[in-house]
Image 1 (cartoon, helix red, strand yellow):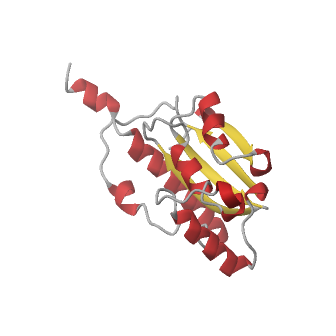
Image 2: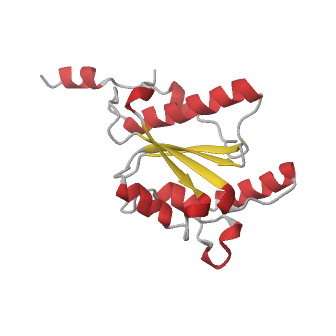
Length: 171
């Protein structure tokens, strides 16, 4: 069960970004290392995502994805990391009939850096939180967000070791 009282939210508006890397700078300023993010475009939920890595750059996953947005023009990223965003943009255009403009994107970051996790695998718990949000959206709308076509079921069903159990093993 997620206790949302421990989760700080940060909102990033695409029209306030002059460069995709600004996302990393904002997360660094807020010391966000573990997070779930929600990307919406003019009220349309595009995707939930997550990161719990120890990358040198803050917000690496989110920056890499949105950096592939076509509307960045000459600032658009071209590497393979995060390039799945290009497929999302194509699917979005096919469904809604227009292209995504990063200036009209709203990013909500759910900061889990100091969240009181209960298992020894914070990564598994964060994937579980992301999956919960995707499932809630699907229950409400009848389908997953266009950017969440992959299934996290294998992580959700994997057994998890509680921190309290782990600590008792070494008393």
